[in-house]
Length: 393
Image (tube, rainbow, N blue to C red; front, top):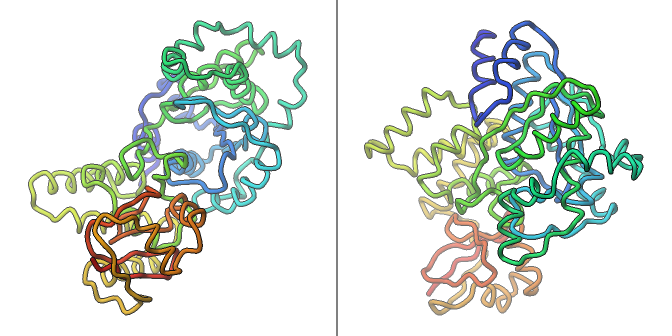
């Protein structure tokens, strides 16, 4: 791909909006080496492929010679970003944040060249801000602006709690841009207010305002926003078979969007796939297997992706698995949890909840995301990575 095509892809694929697009495009074409900022709060130990949309965009910048500045929000994480949240986030302790971010570099390294990443922690500067400085930053915004944000407005009107500390988050994220002298900041559509706050705060400190690249966001397995909170995620560290199986549980209408956001398949090829599905020229199951293969290949390599596909076909499509541990006879409508505990495959209700939260239980290839999941038909349950139990009604 020639550099012109790379720039076109950079500025268009998965991009909802750019502020200021013409300015950014001119700087890139002139050959300027820009500082591209992304912040990640360590609110959980696993990064999902929805987060990887931004990381993959950073890789495009990196391949064009720009400097990636990745900020781990070990200070902003103490507050928690309220963007697109229906309720107040629980505040995490510093110990919890440190535990969560232990494996971040390993996960990020699946996409980015770590030798070319400038890793920063925003406690470096945010922990040193004096109250007087915070007051000056706060004066740049009004309570009206903050409360009018969709998520705050909905929570206010429904009587849900809004912590005063939540209003400080955009100030802190904006100050991050000042601290690292960002030329560009990228983020999802839910981040628009915070990204624009960075521009305003940079101007306040005499810096040129960063350009902002707003990315399309990936929905989760249940068609809601992909979020660890909703337990609808595909994690970057999921085992190949688990990752493949999760993709196969997607609703058919989500297939084209996942090709765009989560794979390297060309847009021309994706358009052909989308048309073939609309015209019923192809079985969506086969297209979904192609999608699962492409996603697993990115995080585990082509060989493991091939093996994961073969495993899925053998275990779930052909029904020829020889790895069934045992079988359970049960009644239709009974909770899966009860059967697995009584048969000794799961120790307790708390263990079952943990496994469900981690996406480690599926029934006939469909992730079980409800602790009260009821059995309605016979099939095979996977527990963890290697345990399979046949359910008979």
